[in-house]
Image (cartoon, rainbow, N blue to C red; front, side, top):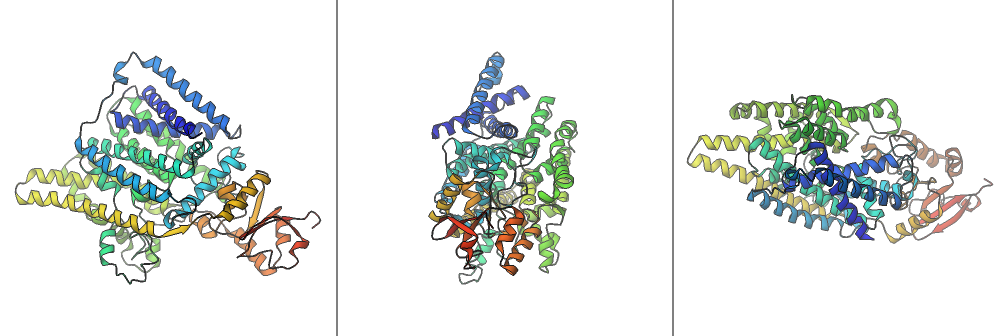
Length: 613
């Protein structure tokens, strides 16, 4: 059965390849074309499934139809363009530096991805627990629960927050669910998808670098391994520090809590929607810049529209709209992120996430940190902070008007994302800044050093080369330190008792049934059975921008009155998952008068309210 999952990946790439040729009527170098084909094919396939699940429930038959459609489209396209031999002629990249970076990054990624997912679902890094919980909950709900047939024309329901809509981007998770439906596990699907997205990011960065630097350079290493001041934090950390047992890397939970995530360790290896968003954004920015036919701009606009992250979509729309050649096409395809914002604010505001005016340095200010607007980026960018501060001078030195325009366009998106948050956390905003502005900051750093070094001779030229190498080595070393620090801080996942109660719920409850339970993290009901629960842990939902006021009032009322039955009747719930270590019902010795026990193990009791109560 696993072979069907690999068949879907193969037909997806083939579908994306011929679709990109039909749109652009121009081929790229092999690795770049492969990356665009994978990104375009996977997102378009997920979009087709997203549309179909409004009319038909998701099933394996739907995937067989999708694979057949992809194969038919590819064969038909081949016969229509086979006379244009230049489109099918392979052109290989010639830069040895590109291949060296690619091999190093892929070996690093394979090791890290294997370490992250090797013991899933029993345990995994604490830093990834919330992401895995949300992703597993949606995937299970999409396969086994109410989201197999979408009721709302735009949103899926949230299995972790009853009567609310799922706020994370769903297209990447739909594709992941498809692979799992065809026999792959969550770990296998995640490793494959993240690995392909890392390849795509490296190729997108090389394309981006050649466009603005005229050479590959060390752009991929400088971008992907940015770890702020992690190396210096590690060197200054005392083994007996009180922070040593609580932090999970040297970027967060250490000194000041910087709103930055390591691109390769977090964005590209744990969160699926961010692993798609970064390469899609890089290809969009590059294709929008190239002075070419309108077909290239159409492909760029489609990639913009397919980007799953709202923050990245907003940043792209702002930035690319400043590109004179492609502004019209960008405006047309920007209607999709604009519609997302409109529906979130004006139509489904109470049931989705919040878009807030809340500067990213607000937490710094609340901690009493002076010059928070500056220090936040000192902590986040690391050594490249000095390039950020000196950017006006460096732009004058390089004397490249086109690059200056692109840099300022991305800086405008950076400013918007500094002030407007997607949710209450800063994950989405950090992703947007990393995808839109940080690539230009890396290019400015490398371009400035290259230009200055060509104008001088002797020892100073050697010093500039050493500066570039030292900065990149600091980033790589900091990333490796952060990697092992995060792998050492492991969180227990789902146990045999979790799997047991989830399997019973999946087999015996209806798809649309809702289970009432204490708000806890890693609840097995949504994550493993796909059924909806009353509410997950409040801080986790709040970070995503959800309004949990009503749920908190319900739980407070239960604690005050010790009356679960009346609350369940009011909410029209029939099932309670009683967590033995956190009892709601069992603390009342007469609970058997009101509930029947359907299933129990050492950790849980699944109760059903009696009809006569």
